[in-house]
Structures are given as C-alpha cells and as structure tokens.
Length: 166
Length: 162
Image (tube, rainbow over all chains, first blue to last red; front, side, top):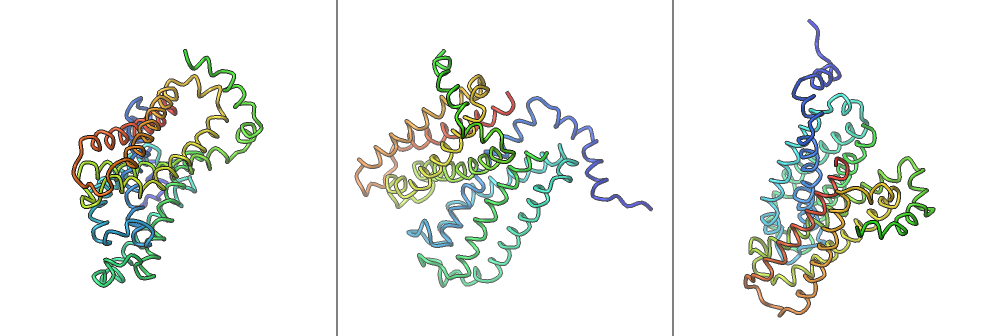
C-alpha cells in the first residue's frame, strides 16, 4: 500500500477543480484574500487589547474579565473569518504553500500561539479571581500577554512575507 | 484630472535616492508591507473599539471622549506607521501607483478618513468630561471613521488586483 506524503496531498489539492477555480477566479480570490487581510482588524486588532491588558499596559480601568468580554465576540468572529479565508487561500495555492518557508514558519508560530493560550488557561488563569482587577497582573500572566502579542505580530509578518516567496 | 497636477511631485518622489534604494532592494518593500500591516492592526483595532463604545456596546461606563483619547496613542501611532510605510512603498513605484484607479480611490478615502479622525479629536477635546450617555453625534463620527478606514483598506487591497 502506498501512503501519500504531505507533498502528494498538496499536489492533489492544487489539482482539484475547486483549487484551480479559486486560484483563477477574477472576483473570488481577491475577495477571499482581501477578507483575510482586513480580517486582521477584527482578529489581531482586538486580541492585542486583551494582550495589552494582561501585560498591564492598557485598559487598566477594567478587569481582565471585562476586557475579555469587550473583545470576545469580535475576536472570535475575526478569527473565524481568518480560519475560513486562510484555509481557502491554502487550498488555492497548496503546493506553493508547501514549498514556502514562511508558510511553514507561520504554522509553527500558530501552534506556539495555541500552546501559549493552553498553558495560560491551565495555569495562572485558573487563579484569575485573585488578580482579575489588578492593574498589573502577575508576571506569568504578563508574560502570556506579551508572548501572544509577539507571536501574533510574527504570524502576520510570516503571512505577508509568504506572498513574496510564492 | 487632479492626479495629472501631481505629476511633478510623483516624478520627484520616484527619483529620490530612497525610492531608488527601495526598488533596488530585494526585501525593502516586503518589510515595509509587514510594518504597514502592523500599523493596520493598531489603527483598525482601536477605531473598532471606539465605534463599539460610541454605539454603547462596550465600556459603557466610560465617556466616549475619554475612550477616544485613551486609545489615541494606538490610533495615531498606527495611522502614522501606515502613512510613513505607505509613502515609502508609494515612492518606490510612484509613476505606476498614481495611474491605478484603486490607489486613487484609496487616497480619496484616506483624506476623508484623516479629516474625520481630526474632527473626532476636536470633539473629544471639547466635550464635557463625564458624559457617558449615548450620543447620535458620536455614533455618526465613530461609525463614519470605522467605515472610512475600512474603505482605505479595501481600496488598498484592490491595488494588487484592479
């Protein structure tokens, strides 16, 4: 039995009629790509405020929980848009993504951002009640906010630089 | 058209040494575009928060003018970063960009957005400090600023395609 490698899978994706149609479409591709770029305003544009609050750098009048409730619906909507449009963009250029070092870096950074969230939730965030209202959260929470901010900016950078290697 | 009147400036910008340097460099435009997006994150993110406050969705117990002024470093910093990187990217291909319909539309949106943003700050500085009530003026200004800045973004993305 022959197992498909990642390369085979990406090749197969790029050869599907749906991939070709999206890649060559006059309107769909620009709309999907434009939504992916402007979705930044909702997704990363809102998560930075939660990150800055965790770092004790902004929104200090509000508790961490309140700040999260402000950004939550827009942040989740934004990230849903980014996921859907991002998968479609990958689908349209699967082989080029496979060969792009910036795309590989972006996937690693996304994984790290996910791990950062999981670690935050399963450790210091469990005791949020103790520091929720504090203008300057404990060091571990500040570090989680700072890591999130740096990782998301790096993810944006890797995504933009992909376009120059594609 | 007004764009023709700008021709001497465009030609000058295209021939500056910094413009030539950006064109010759393999990475300059890519790096400038990355920082252009960093600016977008802080500009659009803060303008969105201001519009949400104006419509009474978030930070209801804080006066709109204080939210506007508290977020000003992010809004103005983001707009400045976008303007500086945008000007440099423009200069590297000035003669080509000036003829792009999308770029022309982007500049119209940009001027309107800047004017609206200036009015937002004028109103924020003049308003009574502790007024947390919903105000139609703030809804119009907050919503308009959000629409215009997103308009700049949409027209900007269209430069690559149209």
